[in-house]
Image (cartoon, rainbow, N blue to C red; front, side):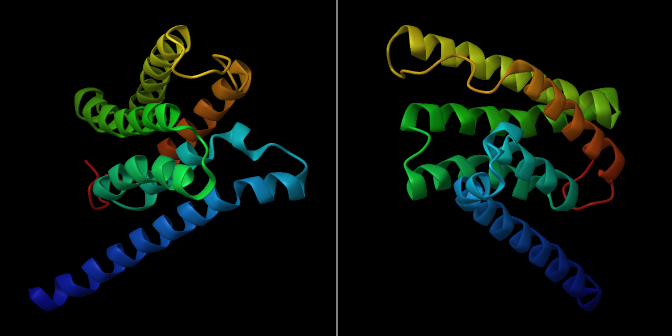
Length: 173
């Protein structure tokens, strides 16, 4: 039994490791990629993109790991976002993962589970961001990414997860 499980564990560990390294490299390179493409890549929500990829192709634990570490990694390597906003993003992404798996258990359908988990986590993010702006903890506009682009990326991410999420993956349903 142990010999049958060992290659599976190794494969999932390697996939998770590859996903994590790719996610961190992508986050690290977002400014350079934006400059090369003459397109602000941050508009496609690179951290959420990496989170969605992790949710589809790795495990639940790895999705939580990325939700927690990608904003921290970004802060440490680039100084952006500032600490309070980094904590907000960390909370938003972690809540996104948590809500997805909770909603998936309740409604049993992938598309509404991911769609509503993204929407609810964004609503909480903007509510808390508004409060932090009002009490002068952060100095920024409430919406740095246009709402239409956020709606489009939310639907694209939800459709991707709908088509590729496998309940048999480690950490899946």
